[in-house]
Image 1 (tube, rainbow, N blue to C red):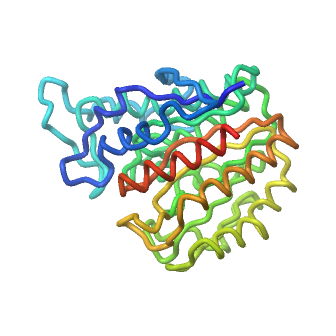
Image 2: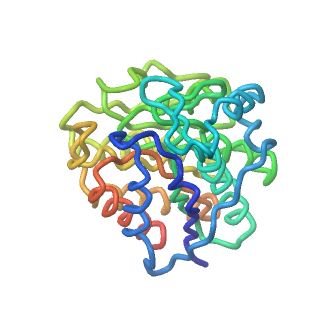
Length: 309
């Protein structure tokens, strides 16, 4: 079986503005890095259904986004949801592809049609909670996919592992009272969104692993080896979802953790090794951040190469 790559050109049509870090060029960079890697298969990302969205998001929140999205007849128009998060014509199709890809990937790995999967889609999702868009994120595709796995594939326990440089406050908020979902996040502190401290433990299902600026490879690998991966073993999930942000890279302009491509290959290989031994190799990865295009391309290639083995 192969590593499934899910992508759709609708994800290029979400346009938060010419100077915005979360640009359509991000997906072009990712696809340039991962296209035609050995052991992979590229398929189009489907649209999520409203029923799938409502597993993690309030119905009136989605209705509000539909009402706010600018009309396609005015392609330059944008609606600001906060200082960093915008709707343009085509934004909702893009975010529907992101959540649809994640749900489809879950089905493929549970039904034995793929070894694992990577969703090369945007916008990112881990800052969005059930009722609020923020931090470039509209829908939380990792959360939607986790609940889809539980509802449609009978997954009892799902782990979400997040190595984006920013804390996934939206994911934590959605699951902090859900003992059947483990959320582990490594991230830089201090940094946006100002959450993700060790004392934030939910109902015992949240593990935050904050890192100081300049921590680099050694400290990143230590906290995952000593804490994150051990907690994953104890939890023993039926599925692992990766919130794969590449903005902790040394070249990224938005943070200072100073990771390199090999760190992404290492953590991905460690996760896949666990999954191979404990949950039928079921791993679904969704793209989160990463804002230096060259680093995003090379780091996502290291990630997908490790998924493909």
